[in-house]
Image 1 (cartoon, rainbow, N blue to C red):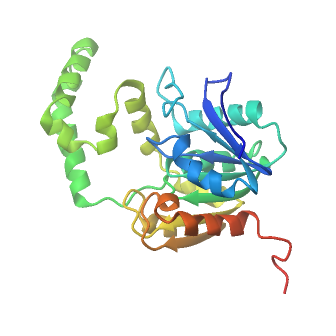
Image 2 (image 1 turned 60 degrees about the vertical axis):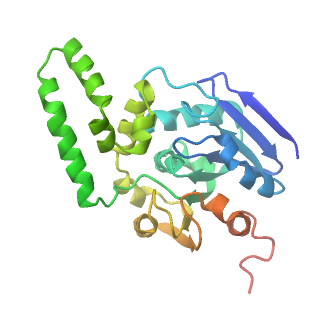
Image 3 (image 1 turned 30 degrees about the horizontal axis):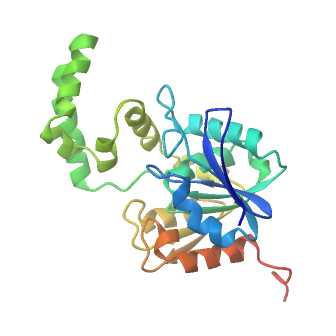
Length: 270
């Protein structure tokens, strides 16, 4: 199979291209990269030409100069498509954080018309259902930060930096948050605290939702909520699969995706 890697001029995004046929854009999840999506591309490359970027701040693409919001990532994807995929239309396959970006793109009137078939897997973006322990950690963190917030800016930042280095603070933060620093830590906070539930009814596209029943990062209950919120959402739950359903049950995932993307000439006939 013909595989190529490139960097874009805009945003210096690293990206992979493989396969043949109609273009499909693939957006990976938070903390991931294009390489993770290659098993799907390798299997379905006979029916689609895959364009898979490393989103800014992940893989081989450098981090933004300043913290980004989901809209900033959506803008970057639009620039990527404009520069790399000068086609009238393409399909979309997104995982986890990539779904946050996709939701933004699907409600943009000036761009969504270029998107045809859509697959979400382990999609993020909805307000999570929090357990009591989450709020305890949140309020505890707020109490710890309060004394530093009244200090002048220079002293405040130094104090907060020392606080974040303590074992107590690390116990309060999420694993993803603790792994980050600087711009990407700020970006993480911006993106995960924006809840996109209100945008779902505005999406007119048909969206196939493929979810692992054992997904702990974005539980199956979120998949059900997303299906209910979309005008034309269809949810498929996969047994013995977690957040990376396309890796946990590769053959089944690819079979479902193939049937949806390329149903064949007899599809819909009686």
